[in-house]
Length: 207
Ligand SMILES: C[S@@+](CC[C@H](N)C(=O)[O-])C[C@H]1O[C@@H](n2cnc3c(N)ncnc32)[C@H](O)[C@@H]1O
Image (cartoon, rainbow, N blue to C red; front, side, top):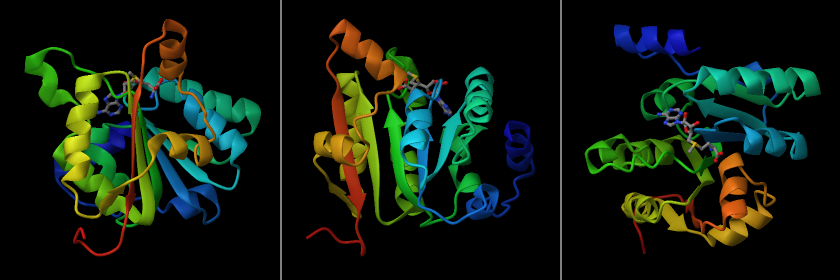
């Protein structure tokens, strides 16, 4: 998929995104985990919620292959792992209004000031997430990098169609409190986390 995406970008063509209901063999609510790493969260989400179609996106081939291997070993049919660059490829992968929820667990911090522009959660990405979400769909982000949470909140707040949710409650009630790998590490080390969650509403104007 990665080389296909690269060739599509190079040719500057805009193919229709995959029909995920065909890829999964059924229509179901689609959830997308961005920068899934080794996939601890996505795999557990797929095990606990077989009625969802879940797509886990990751830049590193190694983790994508491990997730696919685990899906085969455990017969997990409702999860696909795709190697891609989330910053560029979302519009090639998903149709507008087609995603029920996005999760972003611990996006890379890019600590150095000159590298900050590489951070994933930027205004352009958030605009894309909002476009790809169905009405009523949600975005959940957690991070152990306080400055990153501040930046992300600014990006989300700028979007007219997003309403803030109680992120802790969203994590417990909607996401079942599943921990990503990085979250487990943070918990072991006593590192505090910040959580943000938003829902897409219809129309474009904030009251
Ligand atoms: C800090 S790790 C967190 C992994 C996992 N979500 C967790 O919480 O354990 C960030 C992950 O995002 C991936 N990543 C960073 N930028 C990406 C991009 N533009 N496209 C796809 N994956 C990306 C990295 O390869 C890495 O696996």
